[in-house]
Image 1 (spheres, rainbow, N blue to C red):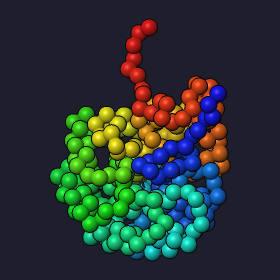
Image 2 (cartoon, rainbow, N blue to C red):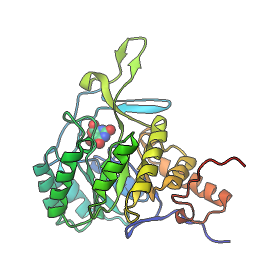
Image 3 (cartoon, rainbow, N blue to C red):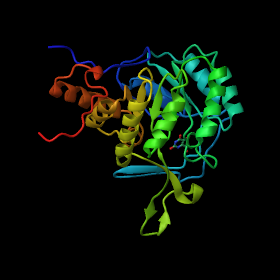
Length: 313
Ligand code: RRO
């Protein structure tokens, strides 16, 4: 029998496991990143960073319940110099993805310029989908995003992928994919949290997080149907050489399988990592491995993207 292999490859970036952390969760500080380096995560993504460090929004700014999470962190991070210095000194075999989220094009230019000297980065994950900063999510403005990406890809020639927000309409998926298809993208990550949710404490009759009148990005189990749909639509409409990293609602090996069946090449774990801690990667790797064994698949490529339509038998 063939060996079972849960590794994956994102345009030449080799991940020992197709399961890694999602940006934002326990990947902000030195100790959190060191912890990830010791874990069985297949790669490491940093918290999205800006030029200067930020403390983020007032607490409570994260809340979790059985089927989901809501956050309005407000981009707390230690600033680009910290991440570049830390990664430069680090000693790990894992691919390193630096997530960046400058608040303007100029800020992203500066961050990219600094990052271009790093010898340790496998790729940048450009976060254009934070639900909690500023007025609008850039990716929802198809005119602006096209111009923005023209400029980004004009100045930055090293591996760069984009973290997308969720889309909901077929015409929007088509439009966004037709824009993305113009660029030498290394990958897209689908999806960031669902923007502008509200969660209520019925006893107190209040919202559960302090910033932004309680509005925040929704993650966790309850968003899985949306992450799966976004992966599937982009798998259908994007150029075949642009890998998709799935993110949203992964809490079991079955969820990993579903993301890959829709077309993801690798997956990221956010809310469940927050809730379970670093051992989540051991558990998910094992559950995913066991599922492949049961289904007699030997690698991710055996079933990636091969979701079937419903047919009566
Ligand atoms: O820090 C945040 O508030 C945050 C970010 Br940058 C993001 O991309 N997604 C999210 O749910 N929260």
